[in-house]
Structures are given as C-alpha cells and as structure tokens.
Amino acid sequence: MRNPRQIRYKQKTDTTEQLYLKHDWTFFIINAKREADEITQKILNYFSTNTDFSACDELEKLETGILVKEGSLIGKLLTLKSNVGIIKQEDKQKIYATNKWYYDRILKPMNDIELDNYASKFQR
Image (cartoon, rainbow, N blue to C red; front, side):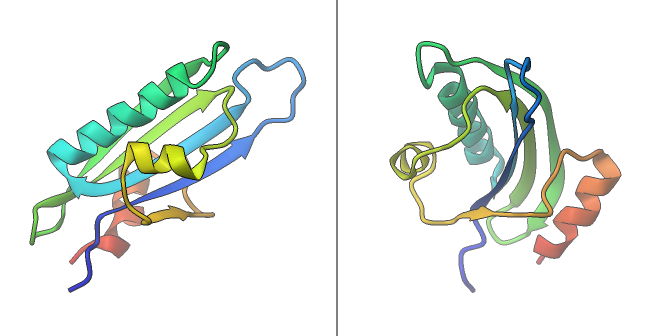
C-alpha cells in the first residue's frame, strides 16, 4: 500500500485593492493526529512569521474521524487568510519534509458535512 500521508492545498487571491489579508489558503492534511497538529502549527507559524510584514488570520480548523485505519490517519482542514501569496518549495520542505504536496482545485473552506463528503474519497 502506498503512503497516504499528504498535504493538499489551494490558494485563492482576492483582487479587492483595499484588503490587507488578500490570500485565502485552504489546507487538507492527511496524517496521524499528532503529526497533523504539528504540521498545522508549522503552517500557522510560516504565515505568521514569513516576512516583517506577515500577518495571518486563522479562520477555522476541522478534523475528520479515522480515514486510514492502518496508521490511524485523520484528515485535518485548515483555512486562513494571509498577505503571503506563495509557499516556496524549500519552505514546504521545512513544514512537512515530503514531496506529497498537492494543489487541489476543488478544495475550499467547508463545514462538517462538506468535509466528510470531501474526505470520504481518501478513506481506506
């Protein structure tokens, strides 16, 4: 079985001129609960301390139940707003040292029911 641990993400930019936090980020992390919590914290730290002018507003964190029984892997959804519009490859490696970062066009902020539907495709 291939390793299902991964980070899926989507970044959307609001082009309204007066917005300070104009980049909407959504992350879906598949990992063991402890590791997913650590990755979430690293993501928040990255967006909070990226530059002298960085700012980040965490909007929501949601978790699924067990998606993959082997390894007790869960899904964790994190949405935030930031003035940072890109994560460099080397910074991705500092957050989670893997090449399993995937851009996901359908990922978006979700409620519990939407998250359960989205996460079901990763269930094993």
